[in-house]
Amino acid sequence: MSRRRGGNCPNTLEVLQQLLDISQSIPVSLALCVVLPSTSSTGTQQVKSSLGPRIDLTSCIYREEYNEAASCYILRSRDTDTRTIVNYNELPEMTSKEFSAMADELKHDMGWCHFEGRIPVVTLECVQYLRRCLPAVKISVEIENPARVGLDKLVEEADFIFYSKSWAQGNDYESPEDCLRGQAVLAPKASLLCCTWGHEGASALEMPGFNYKHTPAYTEETFHVVDTIGAGDTFTSGMLYCLLCHSDDWNLSRKLDFANELAGRKVMQEGFSGLGDRIRHAL
Image 1 (cartoon, rainbow, N blue to C red):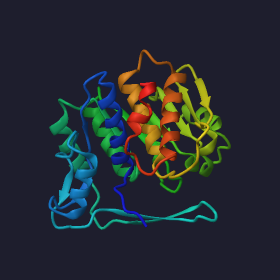
Image 2: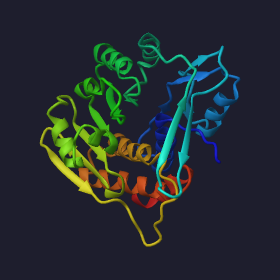
Image 3: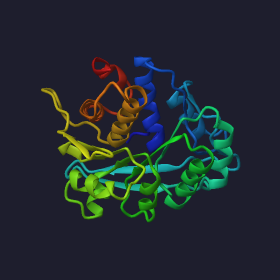
Image 4: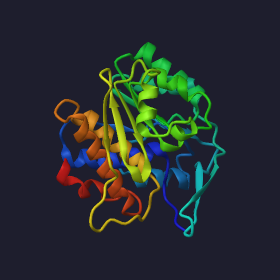
């Protein structure tokens, strides 16, 4: 049994910060905005120490009357290579009013806001607030869980969209291309849609020209699967890095290949440590 800090957005930020530290192409400051237990709790201290000093946590919402962070227990079968996920969270979720107050504090520094899309109705209110009050902010969202009602409304508002294979299949798409082309007509504001497809690689669709690209899953002579948890978050990190730092000088194929290789290298190791160094050659 192993214990680690998780969370889609913290995972994404951890890897993205590694890439920014190595490339130093443009000055980008990263901040995590989530609900955490009391500032003195073990869970909060673990999150802070795992992310390091470069990622700003001052805008997080701390529930001082709680001591336990949100937890996720992942049971992995060696025989079938399947996972059973059990979530536990006693923390009251962030409200759109709390998000709005946080956004107002960061408005002079906020250029991009990435959402997990875990509670679609609240996330939609947050996105709509940004559209009204901070229209220059770029918005990216993750569309992952097919059981979450309301994700389609986020698709209508986002600039950049990341789909999971499970969501696509849960909505009757048979391939990443089917998913992206079908969703593109429902995403009038999106300039890029991405879909990861496990061991079959990843795809991206650039709008408005319907420029579609697919890349096979990364492999090398010594490739073997060690840990797939967080591979999707790692792909998102890679693509966000490309969009932030190489929006003009890298074409879609290079962006997709980079994010895909980064995710493949993550699968070859436990956790996220050192991923930036392992893909330094492609930066």
